[in-house]
Length: 138
Ligand code: NI
Image (cartoon, rainbow, N blue to C red; front, side, top):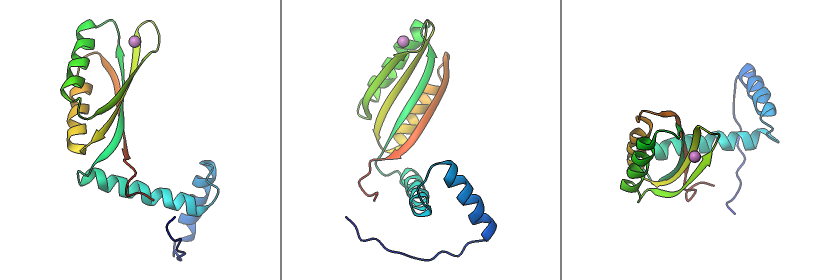
């Protein structure tokens, strides 16, 4: 395990109070863990901005009765197969499907895939969760 380092932070009292209220709501056991998460979030954003290798998931909700849409979504996924680790399909109800596409690769390519999937007529919502492959994250 990496060495732990302690350091002091000067912060406006009001800002710290707001932070404490927020992290209590989010069940953080202490400020340190909440602070570490903030740093990780920043670092992950940087990985995505610098087109480093990253991981993520794309969630799609769409109308299952539109057959052409289904075929198209599969075609798009095949042309980006090098990015896709797995796809999970859930039948939400009689009409709606939810699909989670787990990806790993370069952010620019992942974003291209997201644009291809979300711009299709019949896709009701899409969301991209940006995360890290964890290699350089403590
Ligand atoms: Ni379905």
